[in-house]
Length: 92
Image (cartoon, rainbow, N blue to C red; front, side, top):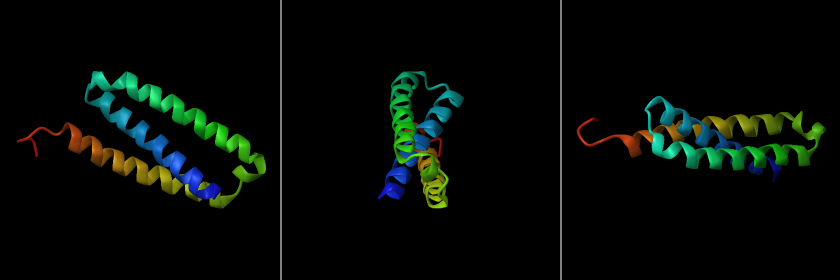
């Protein structure tokens, strides 16, 4: 259960980080502040979750793999989503 929780939490956190990075790179000012709020909430959730699991649990390779896969998939989906949202017709 903790693996799924960590996977999901890191998926969301990295999704938001990657989306924010693309917003900054492409000067999409309107979405920076709302995404910063979501990033802060997800970061606090991630840190709290890992703290609740305890130090021994954070050294478990199953947790590391869950975080890594969640983050990788979250980043790729964020890149795809940002491109679909911000691509104007005729730019494809």
